[in-house]
Image (cartoon, rainbow, N blue to C red; front, side):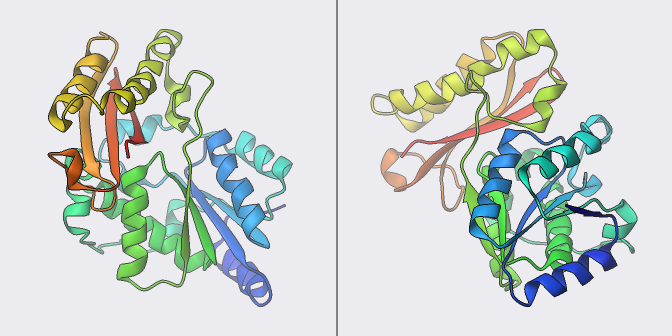
Length: 279
């Protein structure tokens, strides 16, 4: 496995590979877990050559403390990637990614103005800046993203269409812990007490899927929020039932053929997101 910190070296390596091989790319912010590795393994199955990047992007954090506290486990990450057989790991510095100030502003319309976009101003612009930069450096055939970040996945698909990049975006299912908790790098920030309470998030989503047959959209959304907030260790930031394609809130179950329930929940200062397909 090759590890490089240099944009120039990365571009040289991938230019050689691209002549006769397909390149699968998994961009990450490190603190890798089995959810990340599921993306990596799929990339290895689908492509000839697999690249993983590790870069904690400051531009997508609207809370400086969140950026400061984000887990960084580079040695463990590279060991994991070596074990599964990744070909190339890119671990750039901030200067490598942003050699000059990135002042680009992206417009994702209503897709970017709800849920995460509403509660984390500037977040998706920061995501778009780093993803386009990484795509330009790696120039992959396919890029793999997890469905846990459901809105981010929609934004990246929209971004690729907007700027006409010849990259196939591959959606990968959520990987969960034994008790249903969606795998996330932030999970390792949870203390033992919080870890006992957060599985309620997934349990509530699973139960909501069963209840939707008997209650309306607004009532179900309220029930999800009330159920999670009944636990004193948890506080719901949002619980939205949306059209899975447009991400716009729906009013009745007949408003869309594909419907997603998305939540963001705080366990004290630790913010967790999850989602489930309702139909």
